[in-house]
Image (cartoon, rainbow, N blue to C red):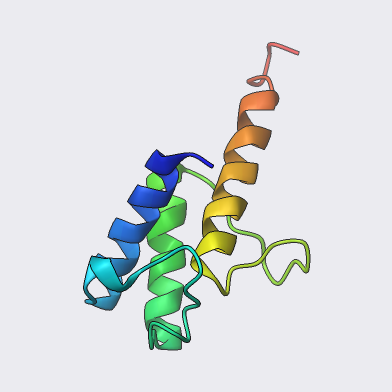
Length: 90
């Protein structure tokens, strides 16, 4: 797992939910961190904007309820982007 991706997501969660970054672990769920649904949506938007990815809507293969799930999802999306050649180069 890329520490850089995890660190960035931790920073985004802490900033958007206005919580101490030290409380965030990979095992934390958004519920554990007492993150309200509006803040959760803003966190997802910030993650998408920062990493230039689109988070899946209600895809059972992706866990966006836990911090580890968010990190894993972003890593999978980034890997898929890296594997896809730019338009016109295929």
